[in-house]
Length: 263
Length: 304
Image 1 (tube, each protein chain N blue to C red):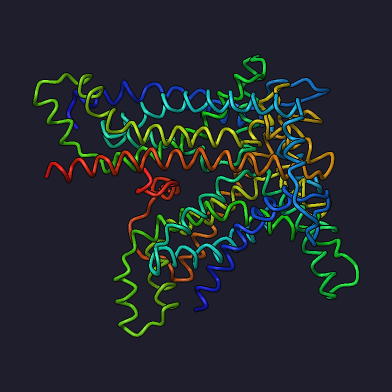
Image 2 (spheres, each protein chain N blue to C red):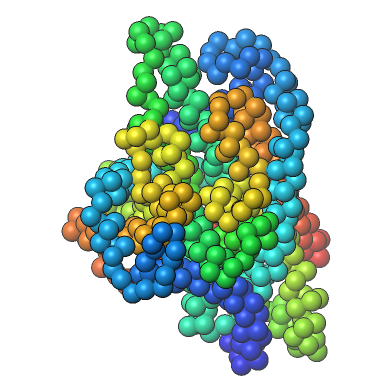
C-alpha cells in the first residue's frame, strides 16, 4: 500500500506540471493562478500570428529533419557493423557511439564550439545539425541494437546459402526486416533534435530555432504565449513518438500474423 | 565472426566511427588541450600552463558555485533514486504497467525548457502553489523563497532527470529475477529487506549508473539554476557557459569544465567505495561505468 502511494505521488509529480501548463494554455486571462476564469484559444491564435516564432519553427523542423536523416544513415551503418565485429572492435564502436549520452549538453556544446572556432567554421544551421547528430546517434544506436539482439541471424545465413551475395542479403533480407525499427529510431532522433536547447545555444551563431526563441521569450517576460507554444511542441513530439510506436507495432503485428497464418 | 563478415563490419563501422571521432572525440580533446592555453585581452595563445586551473581553484566564486553544483547534484541524484527505485520496483515486480511506462516516456520527451517554465509558473509568487496556500489561509503573504532558491532548482532537476533514471533502473532490475526476491522472502526477509539486500546489489551497476548519470547531468545543468536558482542557487555550469559567451576566456572555461569532469570521477569512485563499505556490493566481476548505458533501452522492446 505504501509502495502504491509512493508510486502514485511520483507519477503525479512527473505529469502534474505538464497537465497544468496544458490547462493554462487554454486560460482566458493571462493569470497563472486559480481560479480558472474561462476557456479561450487566444494564446494559440497569438502563436500563429507571430512571424518570428513561425520562422524559428520552420528552422527547427528543417534542422530536425536533417539531423534525423544523417543519424539514420550513420546509425544504420553502426548498427549493421555491430554484430559483425569482434570483441575489441565492437567495444571501441560502442564507446564511440554511446559515450555522448553520459555527458551534459554544456560539455558537448562548448567542446563543439571550440572545434568550430579553431577550424574557422562559420556557425549556422549546418553546425547545429552536425552537433545534434552527436547526441542523437547514441539513443538511435541503443534502440536499434536492442532490436538487433532479437534478430534471427539464421535468416541471413539462409539467404547466403541460397546464393545471395552479402550485398543482396543486406538489401533483400536484413534491411527490410530492420526498416520499421530504423524508421522509428530516426523519428526519435527527430524529436530529440527538435527540442534540444543547450548544445544549440552554443553552436547556433545567428540562427534561431524554436527552443532558442522560447528561451528568449522566457527571459523577457512570463507570457501565456509560452504555455501555448509548449503545448503545441509537446503535442507535436507526442505525435512523432506515437507514429514511431505505431510503425514498429503495426509492422510487428502484421509480421506475427503472417507467421501465424503460415504455421 | 568469420573474416568476410568482419570486413563488412569494419567497412560499415568506418562512417559512424569517423564521424564520432571528428565531432565528439576531437572536440573533447581540443577542449582538454585548450584548458592549458592562455588568454590575454581576448587573444587565445596556445601554451602549456596550469594557470587556468590555479586561477579557477583560487576563485572564491568558482568554489562557491562548484560546492552548489556538488551538493545539488548529490541531493538530486539521491532523491532520484528515492523516487525512482519504488517506481522501478513497481514496474518490474508488482505490475508491469504499459500506461505508466508511456507516461514516463512522455515526461522524458517533453521539452526541457517547458518543464523549467512549468516549475517557474508553479513556484512563482503569483503561481499556483502560493495562491493555493493563500486561499487555504495557510500563509498570509506569498512565499518568495519558493522560487529563486536551491530548493526550486532541486525540485525541477529531479523532475527533469527522473524519467531517464527510472528507465535505466527498470532496465537493470529486469535482469534480477523476482524469484531471487521471493527466495529471500522465504528465508525470512521482509519485502523491503529483500529488495535492499538482494534486489539492489544484483542490479548494482544500473543503480549506481542511474545515480552517477543523474549527478553528472544535474551538476552540468546551467539553464535550470539560471532560471530558478536566484543568487544562492547558481552552479558551475553557468560560469563555464559565461566564459564561452560573455567574458570570452575560453581556456579558463575549458579548465573549469575539466575540473567538473574530475569531480564527477571522484563522486563516482566515492559512491563505489561507500557502497562496498555498506556491504551492498556483491563480490563479482566488475563492469565499466558504461555498462548501464549499454543495457539501456529508451523505448520498450515491444514498441519497436
